[in-house]
Amino acid sequence: MTADVVQLTESKKQIQHLNRVFTEQKGAFRQNPMPSLEQRKDHLKQLKNALLQNQDKLMAAINADFSSRSNDESLLAEIMPAIQGINYALKNLARWMEPSKRHVGLLFQPASNKVYYQPLGVVGIIVPWNYPVFLAAGPLTGALAAGNRVMIKMSEYTPKTSELFRQIIASIFPENLVCVITGDADVGVEFARKPWGHLLFTGSTSVGRHVMRAAAENLTPVTLELGGKSPAIISADVPINDAAERLAFGKAFNAGQTCVAPDYVLCPADRTQEFVDSFRTNFSRMYPTLKNNPDFTSVIDERQHKRLQHYLDDARKKGATVIEVNPADEDMSEGTRKMPIHLILNANDKMLVMQEEIFGPLLPIVPYAQLDEALDYTNDRPHPLAIYYFGYDKNAQQYVLDHTHGGGMCINDTLMHVAQDDMPFGGVGTSGMGHYHGEEGFRTFSNAKGVFAKQRINSGKVIYPPHGSPLHRLVYSLFIR
Image 1 (cartoon, one colour):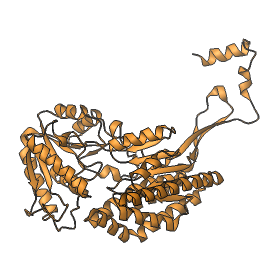
Image 2: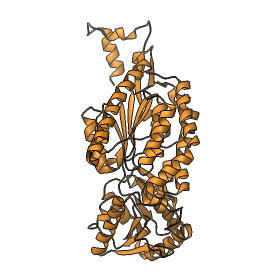
Image 3: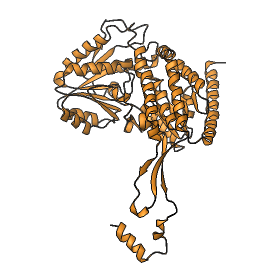
Image 4: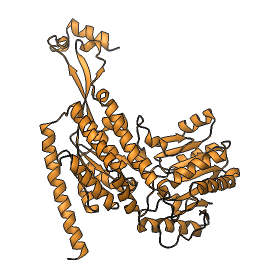
């Protein structure tokens, strides 16, 4: 058989498996529609223990999929936040599950109002390639905390990690509770079409549109964690080294393959050269070499590497000045997909690098004269997933916060808002919709059912027909004013 035929056969098997397990999970949920606190905690503890026991294997698999992925980055961005998220859920789950009491108006007394948080049923999670463990385990934590059954579609671009994660999950959970699906894009398309209780997708804006379109056929509620071009705004008075150091870390982490990576820098025109010099100094200190440095991560595959090179070629042809930050001046043209940071000066909107989310180690620098000019530049474009502002003046910080719109914001830092367990994470507009992490994750994967309850005394009879009595007129005079 040809490779295409083999692939088609494998896709059909995965789709059949997907359909069978989906039906089984729906049946299992009907048998236990409201798992107890202890059941949910037990599921979370099993997940935590499995991640801890297999962390070395997971890091090795991610490293193999990337050809070179920093183990410390995998610890910091995959294992640590996944474990911390589970710990936070375990600590707070009892409180989250408590029905919340709500006010009952005088007209409806005596009665009670409560909001109960019930599982949605079978939840679907579509995982991208850039952080395959955290972006599977994080949503899974919220879905299990809320009492759901879960199916996870792993990325075909990280085959070793995807298969290992499937094996780990299969070793601790029955398929009718949690199941991991692998396979190519055809499997992903079929996955998005299922009538989930909720579907969470993390990935590009373009694919997110297809996922939402597929989900709409079943009116499936969706959380879309997308991306976009997240700007970093440098103020006129911040110490430039502070901004450059933190931006160098945020852009170099995972070789810029992060949905909230700083996509471009808005820098005061008279500070541009100072920023370039400071960025190079700080990056060189963190990564004195690149090619054989285990701390510096590769671009995931050849397709992405060629895309980034195409962006660079396009920018040069359209007038950009490109500065390669390669501290040891190594030859990176052959034998590696590691790619130096490239600072791009004189960037303009005609360049692909300013039209598309970069998702790699390219950093355009756009000069501005006044802060409002930088804010207008940001607001003239689709809402990003993150906004970064560097400046220590509290009034200016508030001004930027009030006059920009993005999914989240870091002031004088990069990336770190994603790791905050007690804050929602999500996008707005083209950068996504919906939130998860922590309590917001529990709420996302729950149905907030409002319950109005009364017992033997029925005060509602005062508004029953026939209408027009003095009692009716009294009710109207008291409550319509």
